[in-house]
Image (tube, rainbow, N blue to C red; front, top):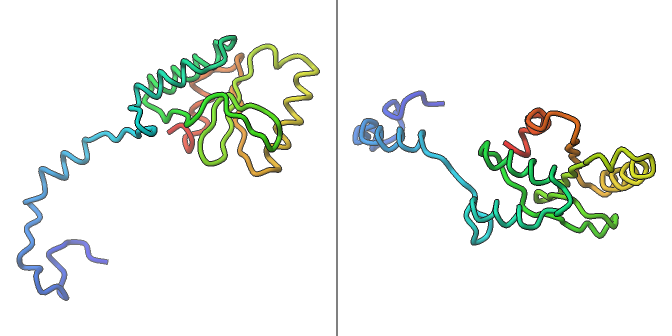
Length: 151
């Protein structure tokens, strides 16, 4: 491995390289910020689109989305995504296979707990990854537990 571009003894043009010519460009690149676009939508437009399509009964979905957006984290690719293989709808979805469920207090009911457990087990066996965001837990901490997804 070469430690310096100017030590390429097998490069005939090494004497022409000037590493100082790219210094400003590299510093600018290091300070830059990359924002993903979602199709034709900017990050701001995608955030607004996602927010407009959350379940109107779920304040937790909007708080979760707001937390991601305002902290500069990765936004979901889709909202209210039907997963036909297990007949469910993920609150949020990240390509290629990550389902995020925002569980409010209704998910504390015994019958709902059983349904959630069954659906999520089937998702896992079908090859999906499941992330559950709970209303009674610190939202920021739950997001920080998944840096590989949310950044």
